[in-house]
Image (cartoon, rainbow, N blue to C red):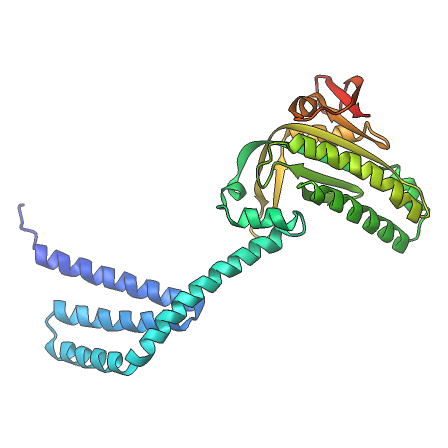
Length: 307
């Protein structure tokens, strides 16, 4: 059966639906933020919706009343309307600053202040996940378990604090990012969150400085410690990973695992992979330690000790 569509009626229904949706959104915004601006928008949307419905259904008395209320409302709030607009603009600016501070808070303990400032100036694409060539450094205390067993709990904490401070200074001085502390191991990454053309050189320089600094550290410690540093370069997946309640900006992949395995081959020295050697921009004296069979890898890899 053929029938005619009343376009005017259709537009009236659509207008009512849109008005209801706008009213719902403004109310939800007010519930979420509780700001004066959101409250004002919610009140204005109520008046707009009432006015629209009255016009659509030709409710003259309601329409007249709505117009009177709107007029009185605007006249009453006109003096503070400008203030609310300015307040909203200021609120948005403060929200942006709070977001920047949040990013700073998340990275300042891992990255030196210069890198944090550079990071804030860019977008958040690096957080969403991407593949990138990076250089990963692992360092740990060799034979830490028997050392810890001889010490009191507070002495273990003091030892680790001194050791972590020393490593962190060396990493940050060379533009690296402390990724995490794993027991007595430290994982650091170069070429993230910002790009570094000489990331392999920076990592190797850090490793050498850590070994040198450990000699000074041993003069202050009651128990001498030996450190091993492993470095590898390659592609990895980087980004902010985890759950809604806890996220970690990190890197994962075989490149990371290989660096961790190389660390186990070093004692009071820095051991690097061939991929790191090939990525160096400057000539560094290296000594080949042959092809190593690393746990979890089917093929041997060529490794070198920094002389």
